[in-house]
Length: 191
Image 1: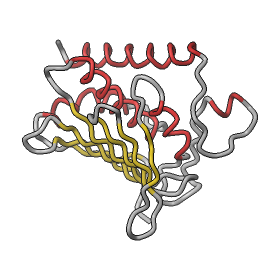
Image 2: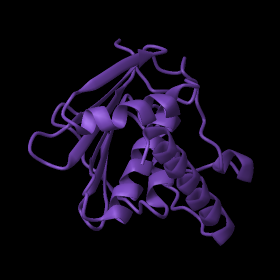
Image 3: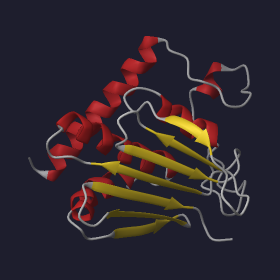
Image 4: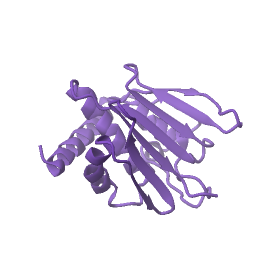
């Protein structure tokens, strides 16, 4: 399947899964108090100037998307040895891990480690959607994010690390050697 067609199919499926979840009426687990407005609970709050090194995204907003179907990550608070705040989300099947570093009000970096198994198309599709969703949310002000992911995901999975910068943020995709694991790292601007 051509890369562009594959990307379009993945994007449509991701959109459908988010739409179906919205229709299901399930309510996400709240990790911090939210305003009473349902509009603020359904949008990502992006303020790139709030923290110099921040991605400009509240941790609760980001985890809320990945706690939902089809990803269903379960997050645990696991602080780093240097005292920085960190949460780690893991899928039940162990094929996806999302690490978010930084304070609740402003994630400074996100690391997604996800398996792209050839023998399990549904897991592969789910995890490709996780990659696309993370990049699009963390780099919401970058209109070319979906094209960049679609163009570079095969190159990265083929063993060639790819990286770009936009708005002071850096996104990198690479494959863990001799595995089927793709690693996506998004870091905020340096302090």
